[in-house]
Image (cartoon, rainbow over all chains, first blue to last red; front, side):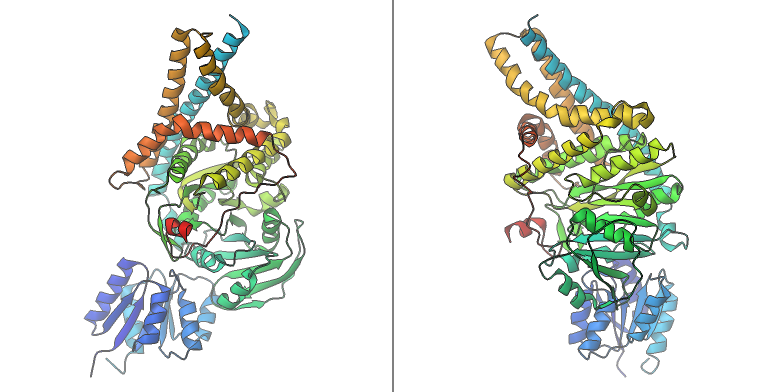
Length: 123
Length: 471
């Protein structure tokens, strides 16, 4: 079985690298992008099993990327990573179809565990 | 000694006094920055990011015909690192697509919310909220001017602190945290925090974020970089240290909402509304003998596009000077009134003497002194050393500004230090005189002939400031 493919959209290069390396070690192929517009384009044109989107990114916010994908029928399960503290916003994100939410600052192991949970059939 | 001789020497001594005052301020600024640097380095801004007790902030963006850049502005503000914030765009009766662009991009939906105005403003048409998980509220109102729009924003704002900003600035990610640190450190007394405004020209901006800081190419822009550095670092830290800051820039200031409302909110149709509000806050709190602080935060940085050509710059400077004149007329009662403490006795008089009166005296000086020298009226042995002292002090002030700026480490590529140095010294011979001339012109204005000097805005999107200008 081929390795699952995950899109990591995070504008902080250090966090992105940390996350990507951990995911690769866990047996996942990673495409890293650094802003919302790149994430949106990558999702539209690529073949991903999962996307980890930072909510606060330049270009488009994570939620906007998810919203546009929904509108255009791009069907990628999305985990949103964010420092949002308003519960209403988290609920809105889940209503929009995000499969999971991780609050920032996060423990990489937690993100990894949640990614694995989503990919369990493929790992 | 004839009158002409006396007059000439008086002018030269005035120059020296002005530069000496700036030098004293610059030295005090050095001390203030040094002290604050410790606090900002070991302070709590990163703790603030995750703390539940960090006070929430409403960010008010007044927008009038900003269709080209409003969406990018909102995205740029959304990038600010801050735990709890609300973005409040006030559409001030725009006649372009501003409102529609916001509705389309951020999925706005009208909300029914009780509106209890505490400040007067033009009527509100509707209030919208984004249906995306983005803390965005848009107030659609009839046109009333920038101050009126901010007042409407203050009425709608949910949070106890408000940040007032322009749609066309780019804030550094940590700018709001750095400004709010001063409220956290002295929550009972701090009523306003002024940010540091730097010229964006020459820098690269990508998707609402400054990605590379660099000096601009055009001399007009370079001169303004040097000027901003001198003004924002040479004098403001010292005034802030004395709690006598005369202006919280309209481009980036954070206020305690109650304090602004109590003082009467923003004034509409004022050419110097930011300075007017700052002076009103000083007067309000000092008159009532209540403890308060208006603080300057040099590490909280907002980048703004400054005029790229001489004509727009001239109009901007004439407008600023007229705004200053308007504020001086309205607050002349504070001059030398001991009730207003250091503001009434020191900072406000010196501001009036050296910002308002200076251009007239400088202008006369640049004409009279050389003419008198040529005609042989002046004693060269006295006049020339006095002139040299004045110029040397001026150059020293510019240099101290650069040294103070150096600690922030923005301009550190090859050649940049030299260019800053050359422009700093060159400013004394030529550019400064030009500004003096504009200020003198501003004093003889015809209020019916409005010269606004509006810039062509193209938004804070992907282009560098240089590209934007030619685009």
